[in-house]
Length: 256
Image (cartoon, rainbow, N blue to C red; front, top):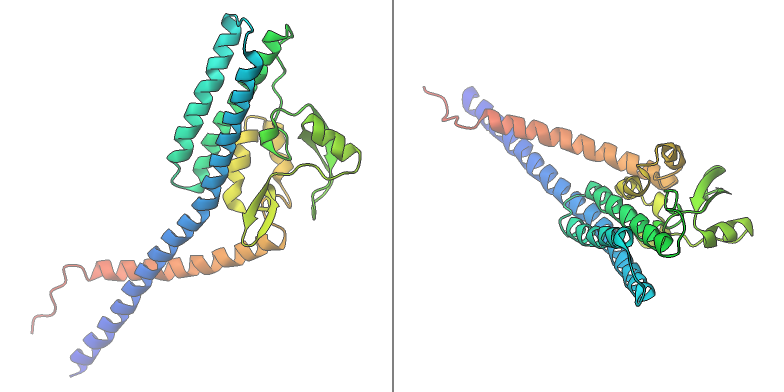
């Protein structure tokens, strides 16, 4: 009788643990899908923006004779556009956006090279994209800026945003949806960090710019941390459930 009761208790524990493991896996999959959707949409919007810029470049270059250097840079920009489309379409996790924005950054530099060559100017010095919205292209200067809730720091800016900041006006900031609010991309949470890494990662000294308040979403970062802690505990118990379930795989029962 005691053995029957013991088996019943063990069976109940196994059922609870296995159920927790399945719930944990389902929650992980749902969380991954929820994080990927807005980041993938962001990538697609940036790819579309590069396509529009290429159309404008095509119009500007119409009727102008392009030499081997101009053609090579033009082709490089076109290749970057096609590669970024492919990379965006194949994204399976938020981190994949880093590869997309790396390609976009290179494509915009290639376009800048085309314009410089055609105008008879030296090739442009490669600078980081505009901090406020990388779609603005290469920055032209560093300006002192204090992000909401952050500290003063020098950030690269395009010509228009540099003028806005120096005049005390609001720069044209790339914003993303977080819940029901639109916030600067650097306050969008950890899922958006690879977005910036792709654009700015090749510029080593830029890493410090995204430290501190950047990418933690202010008080939202605390919420992310607590949420991650709760998810971690759930995953831990789910893992225990998987382990216990594995222990009983192939178990045929006791022989009496």
